[in-house]
Image 1 (cartoon, one colour):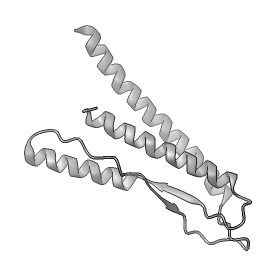
Image 2 (image 1 turned 180 degrees about the horizontal axis):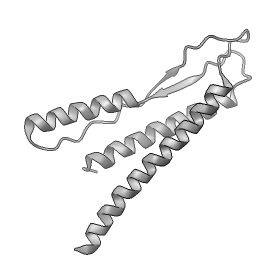
Image 3 (image 1 turned 90 degrees about the vertical axis):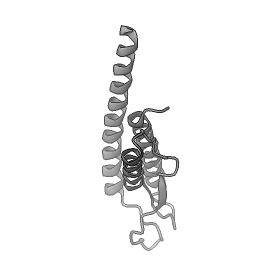
Length: 125
């Protein structure tokens, strides 16, 4: 895929899928002693990769597709743990799950719109 917008949207979808998976795992393990809540961050790395590609495109005069293979970064939240060693906060996980679902829907719509536009152009040829 050589379309910068489509590549970026697909990377965002993968990051949001991973975040949703981490949120589901966190909620499923809310009663597991010693479980540490997982988090997924990809926005800052995605933004950095896009910025680097834009700068390269500007300096070379040719479009550069950003390398988005390693933008999804995972870890634990680092929040304080309860007495059982678990640090999952249900309210936060539910809110994050809803936000992620909305973001995923927006990215999906943007990607669908992108491909609809391309399909319309191809049909008109």
